[in-house]
Image (cartoon, rainbow, N blue to C red):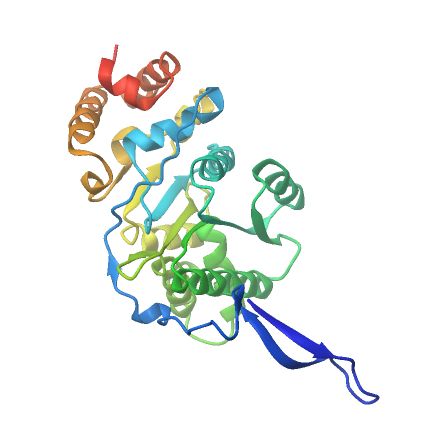
Length: 321
């Protein structure tokens, strides 16, 4: 972000002209020192937790995530969601939790190929920066908005900031890249361009914790069970690239269970780095108890215990009942 002084356009000028740079990223130009480029920063495993839990029924979904698939700074997470699986509500809960628990973090929300009313609802309920390209705009526009957002996020990380990017959805990002690439290269399985997939992989792979300070966390939704071969190919391409996954289950959603999280298929790699050792032992014990139950009983048992306690710490101390 650059602040400049401009001069009035002359008779034949089409645009305003900058005559002096005043600030870069809010720092006076005299004090500004160019940071290390993003691609030269040293990536590390996420080792600081992004706490999501809050008090009240509006935070039950994120309390489940804190116990089952914790989110760390620099995480590359995927919410795998069937149609009407509750991903939008869960994403809003996560955004509100981040605003509440981590006000110093730079929260960015990117909505692609979304309904205009959903964009407005996000802006009103979350109170954070929302960048959007709605379904009535071209796929090329989706790609342009995504490119601008990720470059902005990288500049913030270079300045040592913790950036959290919520994307809905990774599938639509790949669709946008694929449509923009049509006619300019080979087409692979499902009508997906390998070049388009690579661009989307590069976007998602940008998430990282960095040794020099700062982090970029990307939590993206991925659509499944849509009866679209293209969507299946996109999901298979990204399935192994994340280091945190929350899977929503269609049968649970149809039974009006929220969050419809499939506990055995959700989790975070190297999550022991995100908990205190004593807390981690209790979390593992809870997960073992839930793993022995059918998926519907597991989430309902956990939700019942969450409703009976104010915090996850209280639940871990008393255990499941």
